[in-house]
Length: 222
Length: 118
Image (cartoon, rainbow over all chains, first blue to last red; front, top):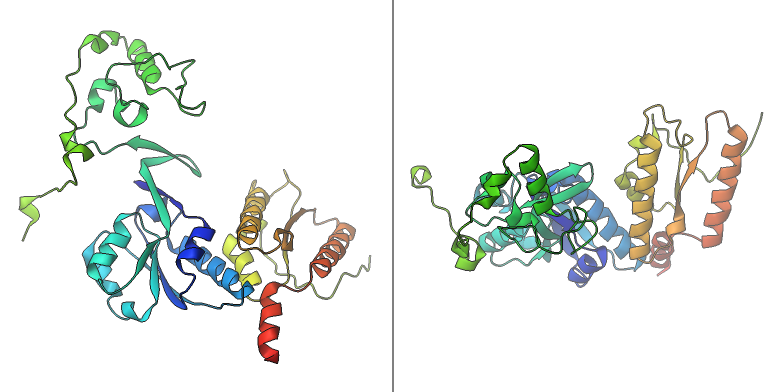
């Protein structure tokens, strides 16, 4: 899923400082699963903004709605009624949400309420880690299901580098060296020789280096 | 044991403090409560194992929110005591009431009163 972190209250309050009536839009997709932009978090943000504005003697009218997905025009269209009656709209979806909303309702002002961080998953309750970089050409089968593109700080295809120490990356003591994990797994499975294969230089054109990407599925186009 | 505690306190019963969510604490403050405290079971003695530990983290989250918006984080607190500690319950009630009285009315109320007099 796409993982995000809520922006600081200070930043969001600054965004809506001059506004008197706002809408907070949540999303039932990834941001609900990573507990940052679902129905519950929308309520918490509403209460926090309300409290902040009440204490500073600048009351604000806040309405909230959480739609199925903000990355789908079918659901974005549900906001059609009354969207332009607000001074501003705060979206708690990933970066895709406020963009889809802006495109659908060009007369309205949209603010992102979260910082979109990475593609990943929850390794334990309340802890999410990056697993994929969306490079567009998956090669994890060469590395026993562990991705050096997303999980090696240098995205090395032949590792580990000299910065690997005691299974940790030199970047931070919290970052595991994925190459250490790959080598250990290959050794455990008796397939260390796999790593003698020289990987061809990766074609980064399928990643962001080729510019914004587009996926077309002819069989789905009406 | 006929103990008394300050009449300003409104008790809201929940099956376990694990049921108390961030939004409940924020809503209370939003609606004008001068302070909110959660009285949970002693740590390690939760009938549902971690309810009181979860409540403590949620209280800490709300304290952080209050600090961010310039309200005193001490208006929200977590206490742990067993259901057999009636005396301690009354003591805590006195303690938190004194703390809130020292802090004064919630800025939410101060403002609304200003409006009322205008």
